[in-house]
Image 1 (tube, one colour):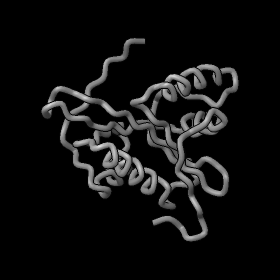
Image 2 (cartoon, one colour):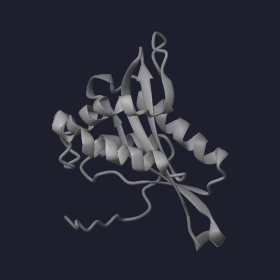
Image 3 (cartoon, rainbow, N blue to C red):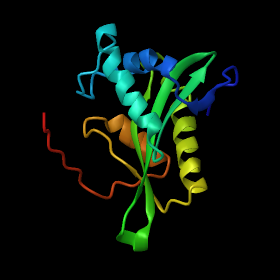
Image 4 (cartoon, helix red, strand yellow):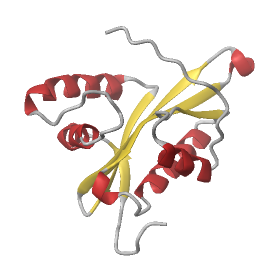
Length: 157
C-alpha cells in the first residue's frame, strides 16, 4: 500500500524522463544489462525510447512521486495465433529506484499495467524475471503471478 503522504502519478514516459530511467537501470546490480547513467550514452537510450514511442504495441510507463520519476515498466501487446488468435501483454523492465522500494510504488505500477491489459482485452499477462531476483519473484507471486514456464535466452551480441 502506498504511503499516504505520497501522491504518485503513473503516466506514459516522455523524452525528458530518459536520463532518470537510465540512472534507475544503471543502479541495478542484478540485471547485468550494462546500463549506465553516462550522458555519452543518452543518444542510444533516446533512440530506443523513440522506437518504443512510435510502436502502437508498446508503452513505456513511469511512476513519479513529488515530481520525481521513481519507477518504470514497459508493456508490449502481442497477438498470436495460439489461443485462437489471442492477444497477450508482456510486462518488461520493471524497476523502482532503490531508495524508494518497499513504499508501494512497484505494486501500484504493476496493478496499473494489469488494468491496462484488461482494458485492451488481453487474455494473458507474461512477465519474466531474472532468476537471481528472488525477492522480486515473491513480490510478483503476491500480486497473483504464477511461475509456469522456463525462460531461455540467446545473446546475439
